[in-house]
Amino acid sequence: MLSATQEKVKLRSRPLQNPTTPLASFNRYPHFIKFKHPGYSDDAKNTLLRLYAIDHENNGPHINTAFVACAIVAGNSWNGYFTDGRNGERIHMEPDELLLKDTYYFYVPNDVQYAVYPSFSEWVMMEEE
Image (cartoon, rainbow, N blue to C red; front, top):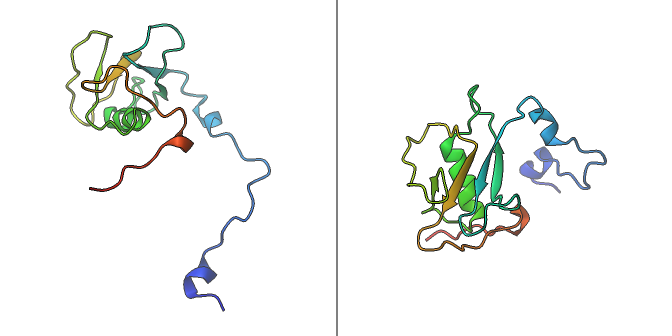
């Protein structure tokens, strides 16, 4: 006999045959912001993360959204910060401001060569303290 919860919840037993591509909905936002790793050269391969600039008509992602994404990729580095150049100063912005430049660097204090998670499936959630 099924419990009341089991009766109400239907679980997908197999993956969809033809899932839609989520990026198709972003075609109207051709602009993206690139986040670079400060420990590597500035060639085309140095892309820590790219975020579509869909949060505002001026084409900029929300700083807190970008921060959380970069912090996760940078190994749960919640003490990280942005600069607008390799040797730039730390950017101080209000939590709801938008990042409007094309490129930023994500620094982790005292660790220029910090490791990154190459995919979200390899990310490990931090344990609560």
